Length: 153
Image (cartoon, rainbow, N blue to C red):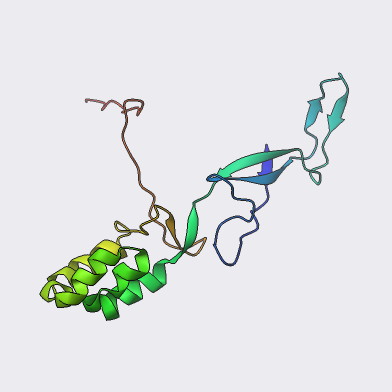
């Protein structure tokens, strides 16, 4: 049994301060009266107040694009292509500007795609979203995915 500390969150990126390559470390405290045998054979008993080990947690690669700003630009200035310019798609931004958001249809579609986080920054990074906010987590099925068999009655 152990308890891990909450990571320190960077105000600018809303990710753990020590996030590197989508991985961050948090300190974990073993429960009181847990004994561990060290490599030299001595036994150490934890009181519940000292750090026993570090645990890895996942974090996201962000580079400065705010989700709130992208949605606001899409909602209010999407017909001018401001959302696409902000996200790093200048050609699509110019096309939306010249066609007045594809006569409104493209603006509506882009707003939905940005709001659902399907369209993200052009550099492949993630949006800056509040650490405890509504984040999109994509799940994928591969050949290693285990599918639980259905029980037939």
